[in-house]
Length: 265
View 1 (cartoon, rainbow, N blue to C red):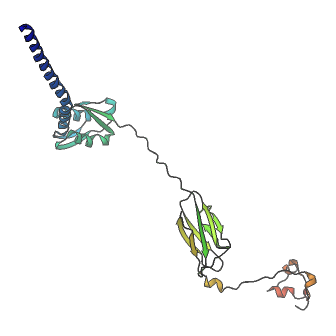
View 2 (cartoon, rainbow, N blue to C red; view 1 turned 90 degrees about the horizontal axis):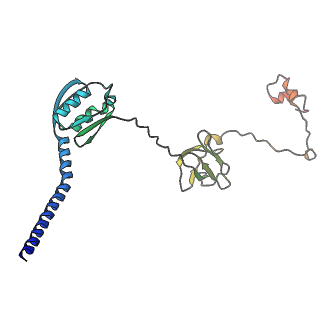
View 3 (cartoon, rainbow, N blue to C red; view 1 turned 45 degrees about the horizontal axis):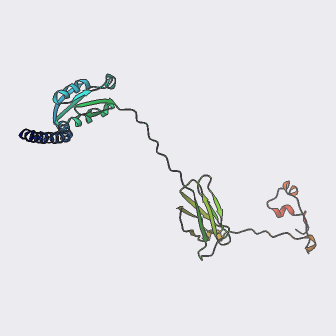
């Protein structure tokens, strides 16, 4: 019975020791990445002081390897044709040094542990930013005079090449469908009124355009012609004269040309 008791006790002790060892191993396994990350960060931030003039990249990499724990990997094709480098640093991180030296030579680098892999920057395709197509919209409005009376027959024109146009109805209203543009310059005109220009885009509320009378236009002389009548309704004498009669006569006005053609003139 004593042997069995000792064997069981020894087994429990061994099991306890194995559990403790397993816990220690798990702890170390979890701690290793943290330690490695901290070591990598420490190496990257370790200050390096160099003062070189007109050296090749290959020589510069060798110097950096000697002053740090990093090893450089690169292809001869990647660094071939690059110009020599001159650089002076005081207690500067290796990443800062590489950021100064490599980009002007169209080179980049990647750090993996203690390895620094140098490669040529690939040609980056130019990203074509799509230009948003100008939206279409419908523009409505009303044209009135200073007394707020509608002006039917007013011209509403969109300035620019191929501009749309509209004419106001009896209530002075108009509608324009604007295509391929998000903003327009309108020109509103009406006989006897000053032409008005408006710059506008899409709007929910209809435009309300007030035109001012043109005093200069009101003072102009307007020639008015009267309509036709049937001959049976005429009470006076009527004579006709063609353009051929007037074309060969040296006259100063039409009345002189008609003398002798039309009686009593």
